[in-house]
Length: 616
Image (cartoon, rainbow, N blue to C red; front, side, top):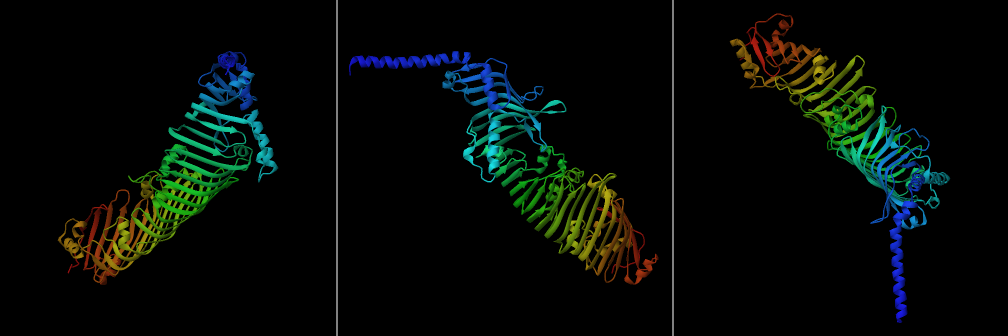
């Protein structure tokens, strides 16, 4: 190769290198003279639709990327100059195109907002969202897409969607604030994330993390056709929300038109429903709900109504299936049916009504806010269920909450070898809270019933029927029973009285002196039947009739028993059957042993009054 050609090649390469070096060296100078602050602000305004103001002078960096660093940037509404900025950022980093800068243009694909403050407003739906821009490329693209969607809502022509570029927006260490009571209140802090939307007709994703009400939260949203979604059409949508108190996800299709529409699979789970209510500040007493909850369902939502089909629900690890219907309004309404294999009724009531104690330490204050916040009408069934120590089977029940009234009914269930029906009614009235408890247990085993109720002394062991009706005011469970009015009745057929050694009892009465009932509890007395009737007034039971008949004796009791103090003041007797008429007339026959029962429910003692019945 001739040396002249070699020399010309070297000179050409050197000239190219010099040109490139000069271009690179000139970029800051070009930027400082042509890509001025107003030009960048204008381009950002045209891009975002907000009025952009930059107080600080732009600083241009060439390496490692060509970018402009802007300080004290605000984005405000064009139509309201008096309103505070929608976005304020201490710094905005904009990645610029070097070739466009040489042509005198501003083209950027990425904007990083450092320590931004985003001002949001509360919508009628309760969400906090920033103000919508009145112009800009984004708004114009949505308007164009709306025309495409309206031309064929079922199958819009995607080829006619705008192709304008958008790029990536990142935000670091930001926060969201809302004006409440004339003051800026921080809604979200430590906001970090990014939105990726290469072009208006392409897919988009949003990922963000932050701290909301003291808990770290993470949000991920994605759509294959976001512009169609913003234009009111139907498009795919996936959403995931994660926080320690609760997680939620949705995967399906959605429409953001006036008639919002969702159709897809949704999942929700919370390790503690009580914690969720506290965290969400729903205005419902946190004591009204305990335990974990998880829901997985096919949902269809439109026109303020959400249908849950093929719903799998678990309350405190009690799985069930069913269908639910949610109507949104001033007071949301939940209705439907749920079927469980096993169900803890205490957990269920804790989650949906204010009618059970808030914890295992003892009865607590009854919540009242739930019945004012939501209407509930559920039909329940369970093959097996528990209510504390009580085991039930084949349960059919309803739970209803409406206008301050909460009712839980078990219309049919098998328990204690028989059948039970029970109702728990809580009615919030202006004069105070009223509670009504009803129980009808038919053909049950008295021994099993007494054990479950915590009564083991002198309980008839046999088949019988028990009826309990209690009504009363009260803010706590103790106060309800302290002030309840009502009645208790029970009848039992042939069986036995547990923990009663009658010969030893009669021997002690003949000997005179006080003795504890525990001293004569090492036996069982066969009986032909028993009957109990009591009237309850202000938490005190007045025993009108309590009789047990055996082949040789009749045992009777009367008097009062207090729920509040657990005190006893009873009189009783043991007589032979042929002396029953004499005893009924208030006369004491020659073969009757009378006594007084005092002390408390747990430690009763006997004081003989007279002796006359032989223990043989």
